[in-house]
Amino acid sequence: MRRLGDGVEAALHCAAVLAELPEGKVLSGRDLAALHGVSESYLLKHMRALTAAGVTEAVPGPRGGFRLARAPRQVSLLDVVEAVDGPGPAFVCREIRRKGDVTSNDPCAYRKDCFIKRRMLSAEQAWRTALRGQTLADLMADARAEIGFENLQAVGGFIEEKQR
Amino acid sequence: MRRLGDGVEAALHCAAVLAELPEGKVLSGRDLAALHGVSESYLLKHMRALTAAGVTEAVPGPRGGFRLARAPRQVSLLDVVEAVDGPGPAFVCREIRRKGDVTSNDPCAYRKDCFIKRRMLSAEQAWRTALRGQTLADLMADARAEIGFENLQAVGGFIEEKQR
Image (cartoon, rainbow over all chains, first blue to last red; front, side, top):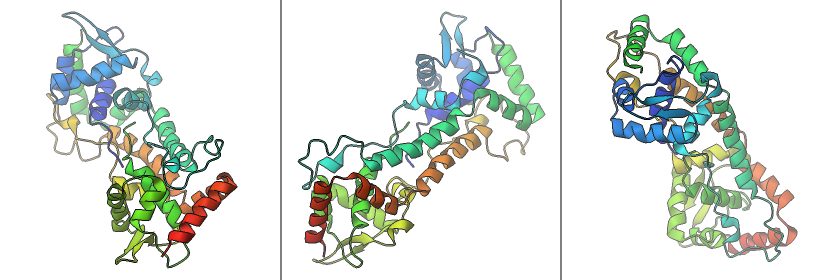
C-alpha cells in the first residue's frame, strides 16, 4: 500500500494528548513537540493542517497554543487522517480506458464511471468507514486501559505542568 | 488520503484485458500499452511488478508477452494493488510514543503495539478485505454488463488480432 504521510502518526498522538486537556486550556507547539520527540517546526506544519480542518484551534499569543475544536468523541480518526493527508481518494483514475487505440466513438459510452474506479473507491469506503467509527474518546479509553500507571502519571504530570 | 501509485490503474486495466485471453495466449507489452494509451516503458515497469508478484507470467522471445499466472477468479484486486504498490501498511508507526521527554523507564512498557497503530492498521484491514473480496472475474462480469456493444466488440477484435 502507498504509505500515509508520516505526519499522520504525530497528528494522532497530539490530538490524543489534547483530548486530555481541561476545557479552555491549551498546550504550546513546543511542548507538544517535546512530548513526542519531534521538531517543533515539523509538528507545527501538521498542527496547522489540523487547525485548518477544524479539528484543533490555535490560540495566538505568548500564552497561546492548541486545543481541540470539539469534544473528543466528535473527532474521528478519519478527521485527523484527512486533515493531514487530504480528503481525496487513494485510487487515482486517469481515464486510461479512453486513451488507447481502441476507444468508443459513441459520446455516451463513458458517461458512467469506469467499473474499475468504482470497485476501487468502494473498497476505500470500507477504510474510511472504519476510521470514521473510531474517535479520540476511544483513544482516551485505550490510554487508560493500556498505558502503565507510572507512564500514565508521567504524561499526566507533563500535561498538568505545561497546560496554559 | 495518500494516493496509490498511478501504475495501479494501468495494472488493473491490463490484468482485466489479460483475463479475456484464451488459455495459453499472450499479449505483448507494446500492444497492452497501445490499447491503454500509455508508453510501453511505463507499462513494462508495472507488468514486471505483476509478474514478480506471481499475478502474470512473462513469456520471453519475439512472440512473447504477458498472460495471467492463474484463473481470473483467483486474482483479487488486492493482488494487483499490492504487486504495484507493495504489501506494506499504509500507516507508518515510527514509535514516537517512546521518543519524547516523557517516556517510561519500565522495559515492559512498550511490549505491545501502540494502540494508535493498532486502530489504524485495523481500519486498513477493512480496505484489504474489500479488495480481496473482488477478483478479475468480477471485472469481466462488469465489462459484459456495462461496456457498450460497439466498444466491447472493438476491444474483443483488438485482443483477437493481437494475441499470440
